[in-house]
Length: 224
Image 1 (cartoon, rainbow, N blue to C red):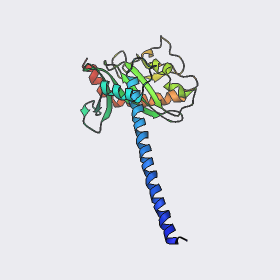
Image 2: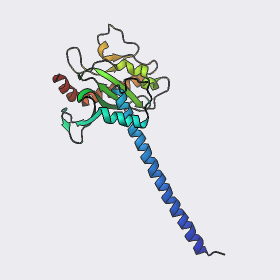
Image 3: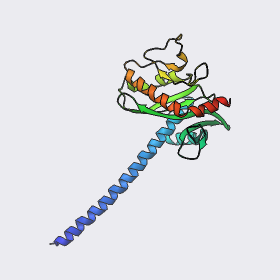
Image 4: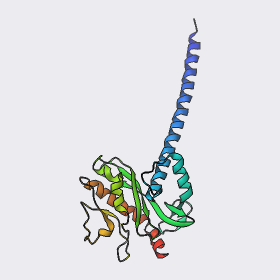
């Protein structure tokens, strides 16, 4: 019969080995999850900048990495719109043959039930919306959850972040359909039926984030 000491040593060894294996598995899983988060962010930055132009194209991980490396230059800017090396706000610039072809900024804030994350892209003129994505949220499916659908995000394209007089303004989700003769049609998008509170939340955080990058886009407009 084996001694109690042997049994204790054996059980201790098994416990240590299992603990190490579980730790390694958890680390590997976290690394994979972190990578998936980064890939999802890159995919949405690309989509906001209309890369690729065919939105129905399914992108694999290698496609996303390749497109991001080929087209995107990342910088950071301070509250005055100046480029800084660190501790700034990220701007993702679409580059085509060395020419800046669009600017994507992160947007986020509270909806009705959740924090909503996305990217808002502006054309090289510094005033026209190029595209938008909402890629992470917990809004109600069929209602506020429609914010991530192409039919809704397409409404943002062509809208302005400045008034006809050249003053800064924000993009707003309207309650209902925006009439062509609405004096603010240039900066309003059609709302989602039954999702008024989600829309209000999106309006608040888009305005907040556009103010954060206000000086940066102002400089771009002045340099036209």
